[in-house]
Amino acid sequence: MAPTDDPITAQVACKLRSLERQGIRIVFISGRTASYLAGLARGIGICQPLVAGENGGVIFEPLRKWEKKLEAIPHQIGEVMKQDLLKKFPDLWFQPNQTMLTAAPKDFSTVNLLYQAVQALEPVKRNKYKINRYDDCVEVMPKENSKGRALAVVKEILGIRSEEVIVFGNTIVDLPMKDETNDFLMIGDAAVAEGISNYPCIEEALDYLESNL
Image (cartoon, rainbow, N blue to C red; front, top):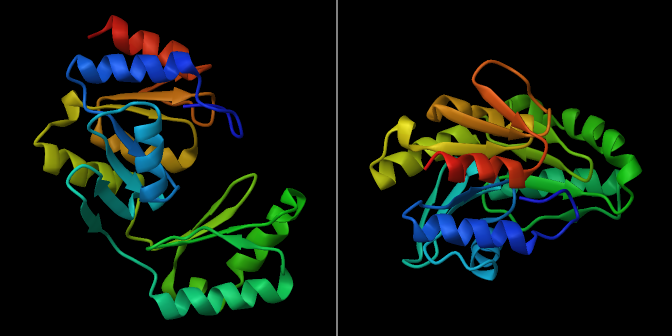
């Protein structure tokens, strides 16, 4: 919805509210926590949001306070991985997750070293956890979870079909959602392939959506 570290613009928030008023259900699926996403939705004025945090690990409907967790890294294993990483990177910050581990260094130039350290963790190798590397953090998550799996659950909850879903994404971590929709809009060029429509910014993608309602 916005470039990294930039705020969501008033224009984008206004268009999302307009889409909701026209009967479109707005769903946020992100690596952020479900509580963060619920607050984000409320902050931009979405009245009936549905969110899936931790890359689909936690599905949450704020109005009903209804929550569904998918697979989770056991707490004890997560704590072991945290302590092992803190020995090498004492300044790490860990996102308060329920199902996965997100480690963020204060010095983003060390992300690649952090990624290598995560790859070498014994629990990661033993459990075949998935690793996602970003410019500012590294995620470790159960191999069964994905944004695509979360979207499949959301479709079941809402009773809708793939042709009724339009997905907006901007990283390769979003690609598992492609199998759950007939219309995948990629912001930027993280992935260029058949079945993906690429747009330089969210505003142009929203213009496309509005013109095809």
